[in-house]
Length: 295
Length: 295
Image (tube, rainbow over all chains, first blue to last red; front, side, top):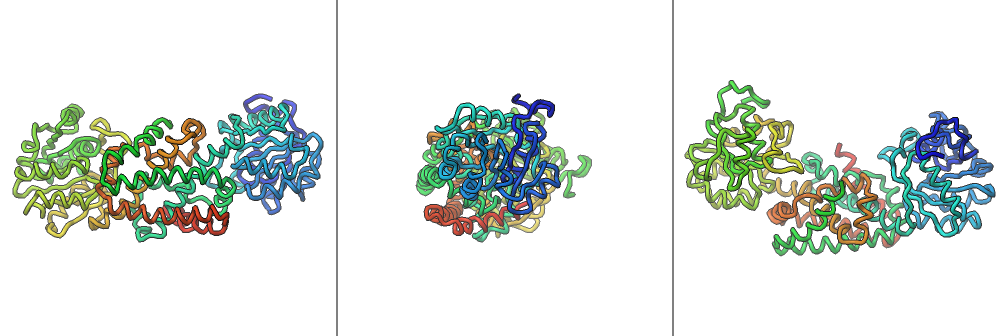
């Protein structure tokens, strides 16, 4: 399989790909998978109406009426559900998983995904290769899905000890076929890094927005917000329940970020209260230098 | 004077406008002022080479060799220097200020500007109308100046008790002629609102960047940063000394923001530590709703 989108005439890498979850991410996996010709058939399942909508939108070849029906005969199963739904889904799919079927997922935390899989999959754990495609948008649902969502996007693949090299290779090739730039990281390191670059910034943006919303400047802040506040607070508009789940799911690494942040904030506020210009600027210097390196 | 850019053939509102400071903001005031035809002559002064550079760039009609020379004969004096430099500049310009000359400024905090002016200007305080144009960029210096920097930008004008109505009217018209949308706010309210929408978000971004820079994920964070971290941290690249001055200058309102933020953060972390999904989502809800209203 080539690293770029392949013409549909190439022999598909998988006979039947089952998407469990076909919202923005699952629907985009389905669409990209069909465009890249890496599956002869793409079937989707959701408990609600999303799968039927995805079929109507042309993202899927067929819709299954249960997890069992979707997974039966699939040689690749892709989980694309919120982290909080993964454990139940692994439990439900395991009895129906084919003897050679591979499994991957899209969840934004990986240690908990591995834990959930370990508790359910048994020997099939060797064929589960965790992944986290770094793509998304503020929209959701199958109507927001796009075949090019993963084009040029980082996809972190987290090989785990029971994996065979061949399983890791085929799952990496799958994500590359969808347009992703595959990078390997250990699951624990993944969760630490993504706490820092994604989960903790969401917590900070939520707290900043809450302080404004609950204060006496909420109206004036809407009126006078410039680019600084707009950028800093943008992800504070994200879904509260979705992000409560993500933060809870990656609690320890997020709390480590909180501790480091609070130490910096304490130093900053001490310098501010003391009126110490040099100390205050010194608090800002390393971060300012780091941010200028982020091009 | 019209609220839009006027043709240069209209009688100028001012004979001689003196710019004290001709960096990004002062240089842009000079260029917009000449374009709008609201001054017969625009003179600039800086202690360093900025004024000469601004003249070479065509932003000014002439360069003065001292504050005294710039201010002598001016019927409008515009201060465009960092907040920390305003007190010394008010002290220096006062003896040379014409009997009818108006004064305005561009500083991002207004109570301290009024205090500095009060200590220096004497009876001329009635002719100083504080202003804060909400415009800028990450660039600085006269080479970054643009005649359209204030086009459509909010300009907060803060009338103070000794001001004559005529002085407030003429200064408001001046900022409108430069393209600004003038809004009046009391100086104390201005400082409270801008602590909330600008100064405190900078402190938060600086602390977030410092925590990353000083932690063990600095390199990986550069590699895996997505749009969320990029936006949230962008203003953390700002100048440490400039922002140390602004935060110190508006210390009490900024500390009030810090207190409100820390209360929200404490509630968030308590819910996270307790594993309480509903409480965590409830912490996020008001801010998320507020941010969605910021269109």
